[in-house]
Image 1 (tube, one colour):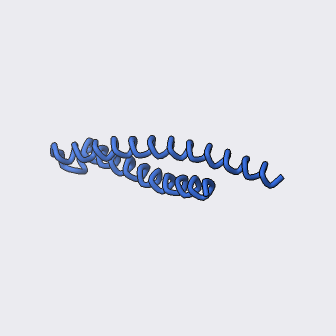
Image 2 (tube, one colour):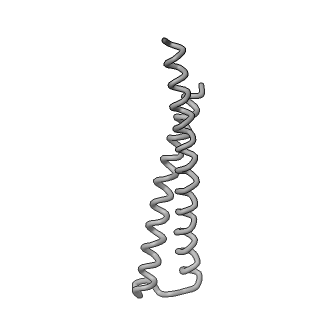
Image 3 (tube, helix red, strand yellow):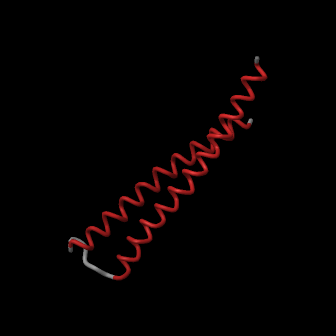
Amino acid sequence: MAIEAAAHTIEWCRKFIIISKVTMTLGGLWLVAIATGVERFTPVAMIFANTMVIAGIFGFATNRSTAEKAGERLDEAERLRAQLID
């Protein structure tokens, strides 16, 4: 049960990490487009682009740390299972 739960948590975190990376990238590209004049500068566009970058960073960091903790729990549960089998 603990192994399945940890594996499920890791899989969800991987999905959200990918989403966070995409969000950071799109926000950064939007900022570059605003800075180079490809996209017209408006305060709302600048706020949204910055928000995307910040949200991506936050989502990436929190999910990465959660995945690391779940990985540690998974390793411990697998080690315990191996001991019980032996």
